[in-house]
Length: 475
Image (cartoon, rainbow, N blue to C red; front, side, top):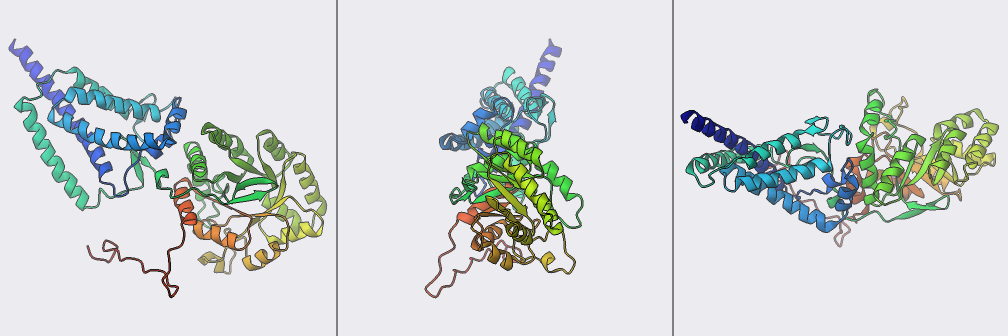
């Protein structure tokens, strides 16, 4: 009898330790979210949903009241569940609530085979993952009878809470609780970005390219295809291909559409997956396909593209050779797709050559950027310099009646997206396609749509307030 009682006591102690450990985790996650200066939101987490229930969660992400309610429910729920599990007060009910949260997190972003494992989160073990393991621990807590008000339950919990408070404060003083580029569930932190909730206003400027109305700011597909143009960094092309695949590609599409960017200029392999992602969220992505030959044009026509254009490298090569027949033949092949046809060029001399031989497309796609970056002033030409004389290029394009799209405006990542957009727009570009990585989309759109700061009577912008926490400032 004594052995049974001893075993029962040991089991209860083991379950209590398990309850306190899981409670610590929940309490930390809840407190971390609550203290974020700009607020934490479940919007990005819902928007990045995968698996069979992804459409449901993505629909939820578009409902402001659901997101607002969810933000507070998750934060307060995590803190309340954590406190209950640590102290033992209503621990069994708290465990059931924790299981419900774990189930939601699992359904939103499940592991393989329900969704790709390349989500940025660790702790995935094919069907099982850390949310499931933690939920099983909570199930054991919920199934074990406990004496909630027993001092032997309350005293350890009180001691743990005191230790938690000390650790949390020390961690905060060391900067460990400052907001990071992350979004957290109760059990996982994954790489995230400027949240969709931070969008000040969607992009609304429109342009017409080949008779198709698109957002004046469009997505360039260079980085998506892995063309980083990073000079001596030979590994960046492969990195960009890997980074922009799978989940990230879909997220890029969703973020663009949410922010009002509804057009993309990219290569044929990305037509189907990007348009499918747009369709999944009930929106349309206007895709202009970068074509090297007739096969690409055929693929574009069958895939729902809005336009095609001759690949800049191909057009430039033919123009340098003076191959009139070559350009005429390829443009005729692209026209067989019965879509608006453009001609791409990295050098404005290609545009001039085509115009001189009478090959005038519905629109032009021209590499155009400023020279306000160090590599542009180097004697040796690097692979991120296309527009050697932007003033001359802009002056010539103003003589053309056809619309033109500025591409490669970041000069291989050397220029700021907001400045690149405004530079191309101010120089007459009808539309501007920029390589926007998923985490830069919201802040780029915010930078473009935000009005400049008001000036005083003498025309001066207000001085920036001093940040005492900045490096070198007062601590």
